[in-house]
Length: 419
Image 1 (cartoon, rainbow, N blue to C red):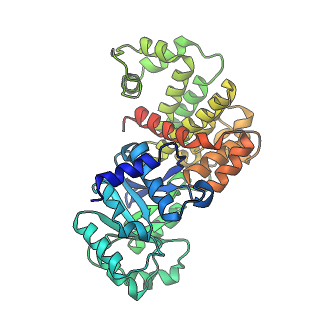
Image 2 (spheres, rainbow, N blue to C red):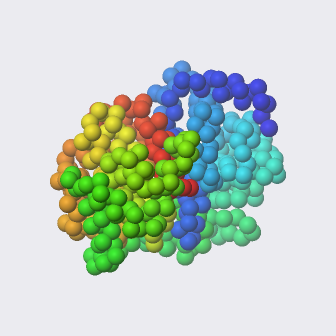
Image 3 (cartoon, one colour):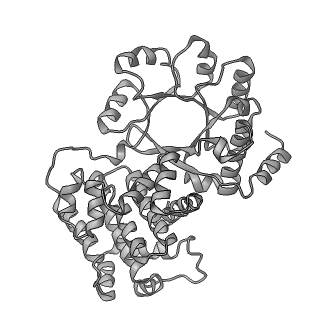
């Protein structure tokens, strides 16, 4: 392990430093969440002036794990982190818990004896090793022998070359991970080729491109979402909607009594919960519950991403000081993946929803005053920091606020989902 004094020194150096970190989901072949890769701000020259790349990376990692916390970032799942060669040699990965960390070795790491030995020692201690952006070279064999996971960029490797590449790394306990899987067709192709893990946003795309009828049960849920968001909906109507649904009642009480709110006295009645939360929060709660039901047959990450987007965008609206924008942005995020939930075209779904025109314009045509906010949240969750800077500037959001807002959205979502 790295000496405790070194860890404390790194932690002290990071105080006050701005950290941008997003996460990208990784699934198994059953579309169950396996873990997240943490995506850090690149462009160290701008983020850390007059600091070399090694120092910047170490400080960034220390800040992310010590200040933010791996549990808050990873939600209890496996965490993939890239480590440059210098930090591997110094065995920095051993600062972090081996039961959740997967050490990614970057493609530009040279397989020299000191590096191989350091990785071998970490592997013997129980740390899992992944080779990132892998392209086979004979000299990489010592690292291949150590690795638990090989990550292959699915989009940058032609299918006619994939077979030969996989032959060089097949066999034993080595697992293959396909990166940049953006459609269900790519997911199925990669799975057929023998990949075990899959990284990318294929889960957020409709599985069926052509239109099909929406099931009556889901139409009812869509109508509930529309009904509760009407400006003239009453307190009594919201209470009736909740009390006649046992599951919704249970989840509301679990949510209001969760650690997120840190309440001393337990709240035991629906009416009390509604009074405590207020009309707007209950409208949000019912909308979220309906959306969760819509996505029941989908990967859990789909609804998790939708809720994080909704809360992230709502917090952006709050930072601008506009109650109207705050409410609209919440709905924009929540409905941004409804086409994937229903496997249908966004424009067709929007015809059945009495949402504000500006929300529909952003979701169906990519235009209007809310579109920039959607670009901003998508850029952040994918780790496209250049896009974040651009759209933060255009929407009036202070870029330095984004990391805290994102982390708040992740925590709020965990409290709502109870996981």
